Length: 138
Image (cartoon, rainbow, N blue to C red):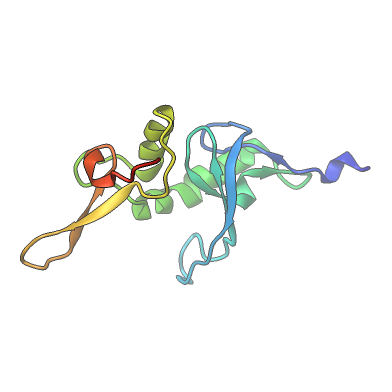
């Protein structure tokens, strides 16, 4: 077995080597930094969803280069488009990390509120309004 081809995971945000999961993504915006990203990995430590090409360390990559690419190219767009609570201003990864410390795992961490004027909704997180997420078993 050739060890040069073995992939290693390392988060360019927090340097953790643990992942929560990998998932396929499709980005329809041709001019987006994420236009060619087909897979993301959610870090088990910081909970950010990061393009696999900068999370995987192999014979073609290293953590220092991946950190530079993440912080200068992907992260600014990630933050610009990331789901955020309108009450506490936490981003989805901060909310998921907080919930994880309380042993709450759920794909539902936001709901969208609507005003009576029909001008759209605001995202409210599970931390700010836990009663809205009473789902018997978590």
